[in-house]
Image (cartoon, rainbow, N blue to C red; front, top):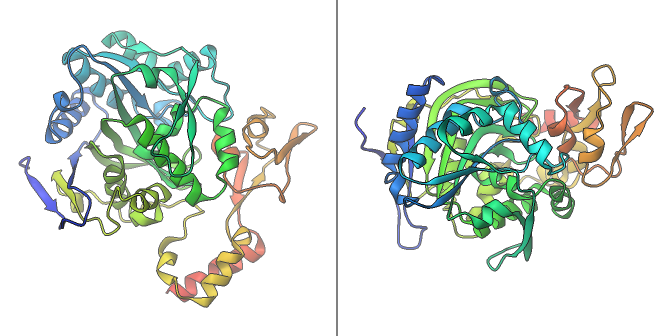
Length: 409
């Protein structure tokens, strides 16, 4: 298919400036296949030279999370990371791969090296002459454009880089509905510092605003998304791999995420980070101003992509329903709650360490969850790699979910 614009949504002077998103088919993780798709996507956005200059130090930020094997589809696939780094290295850039793993993992050199190796990034760095960041320092940075935070702790390599390129993974997410380019920069918050932000912003909407604040501070220049295989169901860790067959690229995180949401059948306004971008005037709620180039997105959409258990679907359209208002007031009953499966638990204590409000304590070798303190952020579910934390609605929550389906039918 020719590299021409295939869909342009209307734009008016009152709306946000037009933003280009490249949609490029990529059927598998073969090295040549991925490189060709990534290069085409970046070229459609202006070429690598539009985002970095020769001699620049570029921080490449993948989705590392816990450094799990690529076939789990939890992390950015190393071949997609490789393709982005190859473009930058061929352009004469110094490349540093950096991330701070998930909230319950201390930000130490040993943990970083372990995560890089588990995700396969150590081999990519060695073969392409990129550097793996092991500097665990961070700096408190003022957020002059912040909507909900006035300062943020940001890892040092992000602050010393000339440019930041985000290489995210398309996944469902129990807390933010979808994990993409915007959410990926939460990994620039060092280790356990993430827990304080979870505690300070315990609602999905507030959390989304905080994530946009992070992006406003560090200003990533280029977004490349690995959507060759994504994660469906109860992501970002406990879902299932699902083929999408696409590489996305854009200079804009909100436009990239909105396009990714369309690929997996989610209304972009259901994603808290996109809703927060709309509130900040960074993105138009009706999608106006996005210019799609490359392959036809209509041929790439996966209509039966499984959503997370926390997803409420079209219920935002029921804004005037008295019944919905009552249900929203009783939201703690409706949303799924984490439950421990003692038969699967390995007593690793990640859930205990990762709970931002201290709602989990160990009794013997089994975690116990204090329901009154739990804020349903699902950090424990995200951290558990043994499938020992399941998400279930209470009996009242199941009844409410059934009634909402009936009213929305």
